[in-house]
Image 1: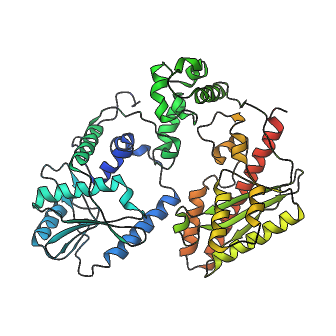
Image 2 (image 1 turned 180 degrees about the horizontal axis):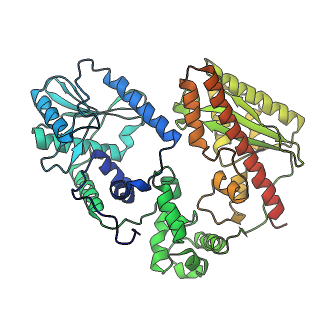
Image 3 (image 1 turned 30 degrees about the horizontal axis):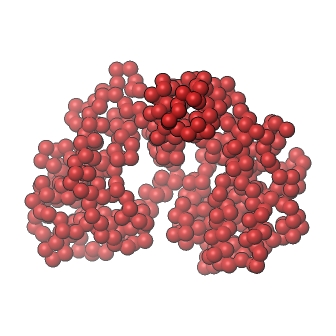
Length: 488
């Protein structure tokens, strides 16, 4: 809900930009907050800053393909109307390519800034540049192209003949803009959202929200309001059924008889949601059954990887493991880091394989304990990528143990997410660097690749290794907590 009285709306309606249409198609609340409550946004994290730097460098490289281009015509400063007037004049001259031209509707309420407009003989080409590797699958990009098209038609009377996006590989992909109907719907939705006096209260799935700048604003408020949407066990599609039954808060859900939602979400799903709500209501763990944790020696196992996956030059840049001898003393972590040189990726994999085989040879019953499916997935992919000794995949398949998969059917916790960060912290574990995380790690590795300073690179890689070690120790903390607190 909005603050009492709602925020004061601006005296002039904000302009609808191409980004506005992309945002409203994903989350109207984010668009509203951007215009009316921008101070609620968290400062950008290091991963976001690295992505921005990469996007700007990528755009500069593509613009350099047009050596006779003029611009940028819009510099994110000064008068947008003046930049739009100059952009229109140059567009009508049908001369040199225009970099970052400003497009402005006659009423001043819609604007856009494509990366390039250029003439291919008599065909006007609209070109955008994106880091996305498959932009042709993105409906939000198609809406942005439709926005460019509408403004060029209105102001210049020109029908663009081709729309292109240069993807993260540097390849030019020809795209179709969104249909006139889809564009009209998105435009109306953006205008209606921005015109609202009160903040929308939509809450998307946690996975969709966690990277948003307004995540803390929306989710902290929802937690204070005790909304059922914060439960991982309550799917977004099922929320209307709960609301129809008068169930909106955690306390109401904890008291719900699952039979009341017959014909709605599956009964098992409702029962798990009721138990999870009870965990929140009572601020305690709710055990469903005893955990099944193997007795063999544990090797805590965690990888650090590039979000681009197999499209990255080095998909997995750190193979982290720690053989736990038992007892109270924490195990010694081992970080196998890919060297930033030709063949470094292969050598890191070979070192990991050798170390894993050494451990399994000395302790045939050892279990490589990981969190979720990422680690065994990438062991298989690297075996496909570089090969593996006979029988290695079968050995690792038997040895890998998914701790999250073991926890999930046994335990409900008062948490908005069952990521290792949320679970381990609830159980009392803290990372040495509270800002660290998987995206933070990827951003640090990118900076390590970019720097020419060996000392800076060494420091960045050391920070990543420390974060990975904490991930290993976090799994150990969860394991020990489950052993200590679980039913026999």
